[in-house]
View 1 (cartoon, rainbow, N blue to C red):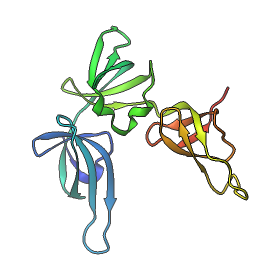
View 2: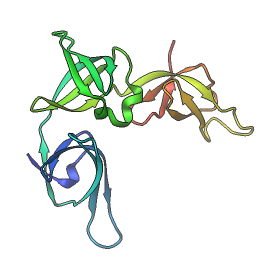
View 3: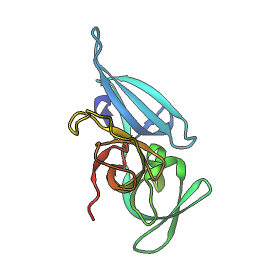
Length: 188
């Protein structure tokens, strides 16, 4: 279905120049002179290559309808993820490249939502938050207050993030799977 370019959002699948693309990021840019345009970072579903494209906000693009299905992540086999249908227990193989930047946040037995276009997997959506352990945390800088700034820390999945000064190595925290940002200290 056709839609205006300014309605493009991350996670959508569009058809452009005969290829299918998953939208990774979008940004509307309003220059000082001239009309606004939308800049879109997207990944080719067949090749995995990324590209940036610009459209005027009034342009139209072909958005493909995706069907979302829930699966349980089982394990990684080479360059593929093996998922299981929770109802039929059938295995479903998906290329690992579909995960993109959220790959480090995938955990065993995690419930994921797979976007399908005509039966082909085009996207995987992880739960919005995961709980991970802090393996390294910088010491607090003297005079730094809890409200003023965060300090660098490394999560158990290798991702670096910023946490409040009171968080120490060994603690479990909740982070966003979208960007790895700190949400709260894990309960329990």
